[in-house]
Length: 201
Image (cartoon, rainbow, N blue to C red; front, side, top):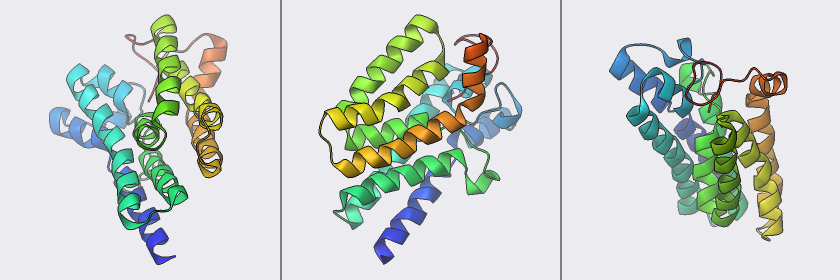
């Protein structure tokens, strides 16, 4: 029990490190949450700061998920705890304690977690997401397809049952964080990649 609590807390704190916030502060002297889409994530970094910093933030946010899973793996052989650690990193990214619980949408961190624990499921879901983004230029739609596809692929590829049930939490969180994007997608007012406005990752 003690190890589990330690893993949960540390994973959340790892996720709470907002690279987009701090890199934007360093490069621009501004709070990224006050600009562009208002999201502390890689897509808004692309709009507000530029391609290089956006790529760096995406990779660093993904590494937060990898680090949380690695931490759990180093302290326990419990597969469910490893996945739970990843979920806590995503929660930390979305609602970071260091920034008044105003963070990003967790997709890059989700990629880090699932690529580590369920690589093939993440790869297939990610390929579908990338195809959707290429065809529509809606990053939010691709993110939602990725999140929705994960539990399905995890189930079809016979990963542990605990992974399937825990992945549903990730999917629900992604849809909650993208609620405004979903409304804009339905209305046809969502901003496309390369335009200013509301897509967020």
